[in-house]
Length: 263
Image 1 (cartoon, rainbow, N blue to C red):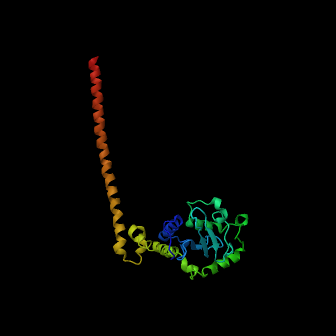
Image 2 (cartoon, rainbow, N blue to C red):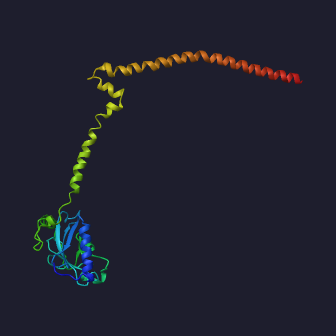
Image 3 (cartoon, rainbow, N blue to C red):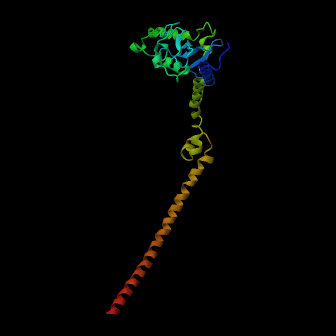
């Protein structure tokens, strides 16, 4: 790497952004400055999902001016995409074509994310220097070819620079396992939770004496107890009523006698 003036504000800012991107990578893009020129970055960007660019990997250059970050970068697409011309500086709001719109707080990451958002635009919104509009089938074909496209400078295919994330595949395998897992609890559940109903169905292949006999014995015992209790209760209510009536009569008689004595 060429010797750099680390006191230069642009060099400090570029080195800071390079460290941030290395420490906090994204599955949507991969970017880094060249070893011999930190003012030129190469980036591999994933095509936006849900568009004709989905699955595509697009390699482009980011050229930073000496006054960076007070002046915006320039972007040049290298991979054929059907959306931007190759080896041509792209005219969008955050590039050198519109310096009046650039904010020094923005950076390389901002430019990458914004470029991805410009891919699906169509019509007048997609018109500009470096913009082209190929038919959807052609863009899909180029997206498939872009995965194996090799940058002449990086000398690696886009898929090696930005591999496909493995998270969705692992999640898919676990979801399949989770879908099969609930079928196992359904088999033992009837055995543990059902004593009367499911056991009668299971009693056909099993010996009926051990399982079916218990419900038969349990059912008549409560019936006998219930029948015996009413027979006892039918004899007790008359005695209680008699005693209650006697007490009431005695109280009434006492009240009557007291009133007669007053007279």
